[in-house]
Length: 243
Image (cartoon, rainbow, N blue to C red):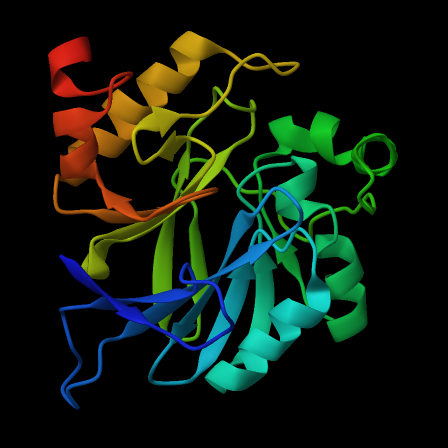
């Protein structure tokens, strides 16, 4: 289980840190994470870092790059890579820009989201946001591992919202970053091109629920929740609905 603490990354109350209750021998949790909302869509960009090495990664650096860099500096973290859950504009529209500026590799999403990444420029113009096409240094597949400092996160392919959506899961902390698969009280939209409602339901119930009710997760938008809370109360994928 994880606990939630405030971090002073700005005026928004959604700037929070997730700290694992499983501490290292020094009493410090092995992993910390913070949410920095970005873009007009208030997308939850997550900064995660290894407390032993203070090396970290930004997950879904969709925009507001000056705000993201300020948060990284305030946390005292050295970025070593950028991770991406899926190819929608608010989640990765400016990831390629930041990668070039800071000479960082990009990992994720699954290559099935190449369709979405290829249209970032056009989507940016449509929505009044800047988007730039990029090529990840590493496309991710279900069962892959990504490292951040001395942390290892599991990659779980969860299609439905987009075909190449992935979730990052840190098992020792019972903590996941789920992008737009699941939200507090809701689920991701499936009415965009290549979305599939049944795939999304299956991703949640067959891939996320087995991880355990005590898993805390950061969604792509909105408040932090737990799988247990969503199984009790979510009107789309709660146990009372899907059995």
